[in-house]
Amino acid sequence: MGFVSGLKCRECGREYSTEPIYVCEFCFGPLEAVYDYSKIRKAVSRKKIENRDENLWRYRELLPIDGEPQVGLYSGFTPLVKADNLARELGVKELYIKDDTVAHPTLSFKDRVVAVALTKAKEFGFDTVACASTGNLAHSVSAHGAKAGFERFIFIPATLEASKIVASLVFEPNLIAVDGNYDDVNRLCSEIANKYRWAFVNINIRPFYAEGSKTIGFEIAEQLGWRAPDNVVVPCASGSLLTKVHKAFKELKEVGILKSADTRIFAAQADGCNPIVTAIKNDTDVIRPMKPDTVAKSLAIGNPADGFYAYRVVKDSGGFGEEVTDDEIIEGMKTLARTEGIFAETAGGVTVAVTRKLIEKGYIDSNELTVICVTGNGMKTQEALQGRMSEPIYIKPNLQAFEEALKKK
Ligand SMILES: *Cc1c(COP(=O)(O)O)cnc(C)c1O
Ligand SMILES: [Zn+2]
Image (cartoon, rainbow, N blue to C red; front, side, top):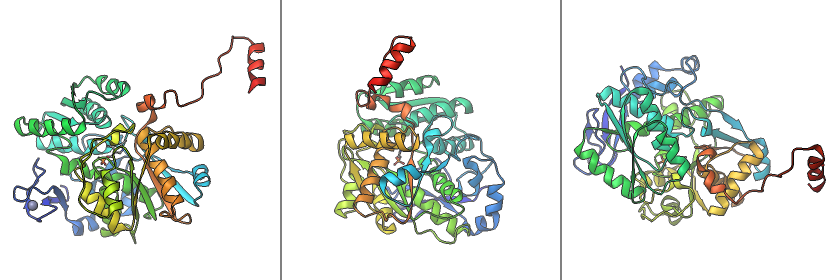
């Protein structure tokens, strides 16, 4: 048995039973899973967690499932890399990269949320899963869904990077490329979700899906020796991941695993799609939707579903937000690769470049411990680097040619 007692509206507090629903019938507020923390407090301990397999299900008491984990048994528990070279470059004392570029099976943090969503979809008895995606979610639903034996419908904007389309198609889902941007795709999917009995991971089972993002926070705390960091920088698309990283530290404290959880949460966006950071900077909780135009396509959500809640978490935690240009994003990707040997996708470039800005402007204290969430692999967005790097040195296959090249270097 699990520890979720039901769902609750985040606005009016009305309670619902555990079903594939996501919005309050009375006020249209989003629904969230409700846990029995006093029961969890008795059921978990650091030791118990540490003795489990190294995957995201080691925190299963704080995830919204009732039975055994069924999907993603190899997902999660990615490295927390001590980034001393990058720390030196950015001028801070203690810096870590939470490295989801090596997430199993599809190299982005979406493997976490989909593992939880599809386990829940099995519990609900769905045979078809679906999603609206900016790319990474498509990969993960396609892959996890293949192994779990689901029929899959994947909806993407037709303009996605070619390499991102291949990385979904290889798993042979039904891939629907929609003539429109992500917000158009999402609107269409909401209509489809009303009509067909499918589990849309980020629509009708979103309350369960979103909880999977907490596992990044749980792992960071455990990998730091059971402590919450001073600062975390999180890339934002819908804003969900940011709110859940914060929730993770608070929950670990609530169930007695952490002594304190006062982490400041920082939002990272591209300036071509920055509705959440704009709200933070203007100090208003009204999120103004915009039309995205950025190389960071996996973050290109112009009308972020959790924007308001992300704004609140940043403000309440004492954090801030920054945005960066496409050039700064590419520079961020190259800096991370050059200093730490990690090839992140454009979203990682956003987060690294934003962290640099936050440090330079004094929003992040250089004597504190900071974690940067790097959420996807650079192999997925190679187009973004085309023409932005040095060329290989071409030579004939003989020693003399090599040595001539060596002299020119
Ligand atoms: C989806 C995604 C995010 C952010 O997700 P939200 O929870 O929607 O804010 C961050 N990074 C990458 C690489 C993603 O694919
Ligand atoms: Zn409500």
